[in-house]
Image 1 (cartoon, helix red, strand yellow):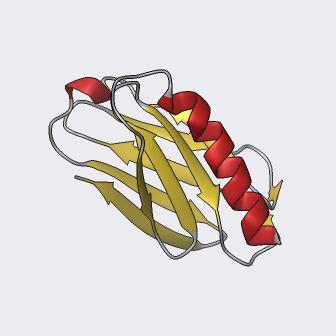
Image 2 (cartoon, helix red, strand yellow):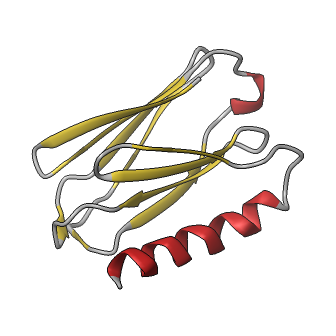
Length: 113
């Protein structure tokens, strides 16, 4: 049931984004995170799909050849947890975009090539 709820939220958020640009939404995932990115607009959604009930010290560092920025949560977040933002200059980036995600003393990396 929890996974179904995540999937529905994830698909609804990006069905809106998919209509906004010329490029389709691309998806990548790691063990604990799903990531959807529309490179033409720079919009992305990062969704926690792990088993923990509380996300502490969340931070995602986003790096490419054109930009380096981060997204972080100022408070502890209960799951389900999802965050969306826009990457600066993503449409001009030809190389990979790297998402270094850390939370609860753990970390994972997702790379869009």
